[in-house]
Length: 67
Image (cartoon, rainbow, N blue to C red; front, side, top):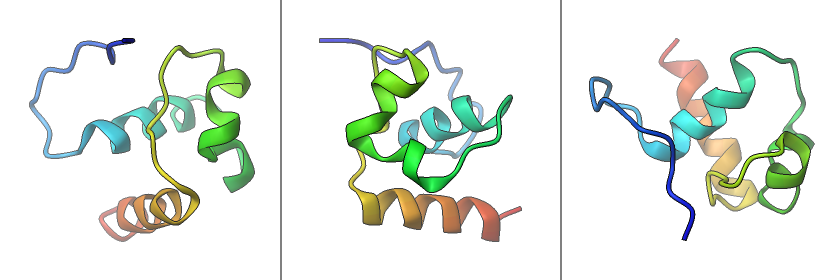
């Protein structure tokens, strides 16, 4: 099983939110590239947020509403 990168647990963000932010931090992408079926190959990462499309949308909406 692939483990997520080390987290300091200093933030209240979930692991899934942090994984999404990992790719959004340095790049501009659209929703399609964050879908679970595309995430790993697109970003060449051994892990994904493991969220279905609706959960990705809700995660992005939540992050945006929290600034």
